[in-house]
Amino acid sequence: MSVNTSGDLLWNPALFEAARTEKGFDFRPLLASVRPFLDEADVAICHQEVPLAEQGGPYSGWPRFRAPQETVEAIVAAGFNVCTTASNHSVDDGWAGMKRTLEVLHRHGIATAGTSATRAEDDEPDLFTTDDGVVIGFVSQTFSTNQIPVPQGREWSVDLLDPDKAISDARAAREAGADIVIFHMHAGEEYVHEPNKDQQWMAQKVTASGEFDLVIGQHPHWVQPIAKVNDTWVVYSTGNLIAAMPGKRPGTHDGAMVEVEFAEGPDGDFSAKTVTWAPTYITDAKNDPTGRPRVLLIPDELEDADPALRKRLNASAARTREVITSGNAPGLSERTGSSG
View 1 (cartoon, helix red, strand yellow):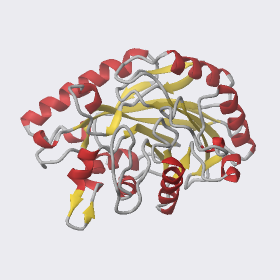
View 2 (spheres, one colour):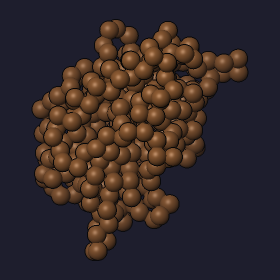
View 3 (cartoon, helix red, strand yellow):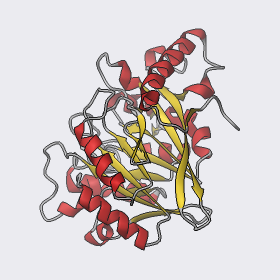
View 4 (spheres, helix red, strand yellow):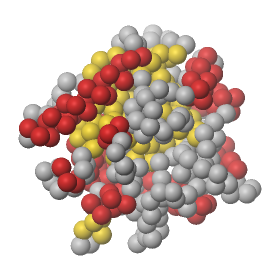
């Protein structure tokens, strides 16, 4: 049984323009490269960092995002099953935007964790059942909502970093039948390769409880190490999966997809055994042969890349490799190409 996690889906205005068609938007080509890796997993987890706008807009980027609903069609086409939604941008478009985001994701068959549209929904554990009947519980929390208040009277709608609540929610997921429980934290300092004290503190607290089988994270927009904390795999940050961030920050183009393989023991308990990661790279419209930005799964794209692109892919992979492996965790391996 395996799960796949990857970087932030940070839908910037430059991506809106790249996906624009005569009839609206088509974001599917931007994520198409990652489909083979996602298809290998039983559960493919994405991080929908920003809210979705009303159909037809208006759309906006930083500091308060509103992305086209057509981005969800790309999420589905890529092969994702579950999206975490707790982020510092969860309430960028207020209560209506947060509720709309959940409704659109659910309408397209994508399960969510981290934000809730009703109190009853928040009270229920976030569970996903694989085709083989394995039940995965998710607990997703964010360090901040960018000083935008969570709607008064609906403080339950966004889960903020709280190890005690995370542990309590994990226990509730177990009681509801979860075989595996995953903690997701949207936390850290942007544009750094090392987890900060908040990330390390949360990882230490939740793994020490024994209630979580895996910890994953986003927000820094740069990749960070994969490590083991209290004998539990912690994927601190997988960078960006898709984004078009301004400025000269090469780290925002680099990302990682991570597949964690779980083994079932004789008593029916599951434990994470091995982790396979793959570097990803986000092109720019000006240097991509297609003329638009997209994410490329590096090991699967190298062979067919032209020399200039291949050079950039190899450089990105080398940068990511140095960071990802710095945690020195045994059982970590790198994907070398499509197995399909």
